[in-house]
Amino acid sequence: MTFDPASFVFSQSSEATAIRASTVLPARRENVEIQTEDGCVLVGELAVPESGEIAATLITLHPLPTHGGFMDSHVYRKASFRLPALAGVAVLRFNTRGTTSPRGTSGGRFEEGIGERLDVEAAVRFAASRNLPNRWLVGWSFGTELALMYGATEPVASEVEGAVLLSPPLHRATDAHLLEWAASGKPLKVLVPEHDDYLRPEAAAERFGLVPQADVVGVDGAKHLWVGEKYAARVLNEIVDEITAQGAGPEGLPQDWNGPVASAAP
Image 1: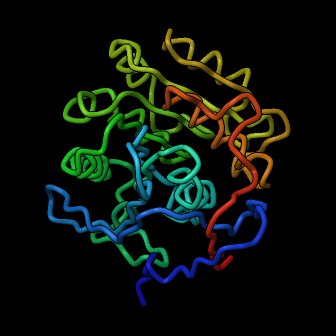
Image 2: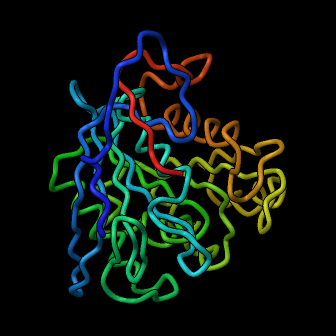
């Protein structure tokens, strides 16, 4: 059965609620389908603020589907649960071709990052067609490869402001792709866990030295999957600081919410 975001049940507490891993804050959420140029239908979800202007838009590219990555990978799930309410940020999540999650299964099959070029283009085209402003790619692990390989060239480059990379392995993305980002001049924020399995901060700083505008940030104590609320919250704060004018604030995004909340299944 396809998960319906309208099934969240919100209730109002008499006092502020601590924001935890499963806390869902109010937003307008809808299941969406994204059509690629080669005929695949990608399933996803769009979450936007309930009211007010949208400060920025995240187009999320998930970790490797052959190793458990999908649109519900925990950092992206928390982004959709929190950022529309806390930062006025719209979050578009979707499964790349052949990937399955509770939302459903996207058409096509996994293509090692090659056919997925059309998935990236389709997602960006979808966000633009919805007039979602200030669009940023956010890639995690395999998703960083897609952002690096396809984000700095057309038809994507003119439709996005820049990219935020989480745990880039730099396996598929090459120096040629980094040089394309350098030439584009578009911002590139790179969050690298201290204990990453593939690329650690010192090596990342060297590799991304080809991109003068890249901001490489090593995160002490973190691992490739950003497990733990401390590290997920750090990622969300860094993203909001990068993509919005107001940023996350000196203390980071609020950790409590005065208003209706729902709870998601683990």
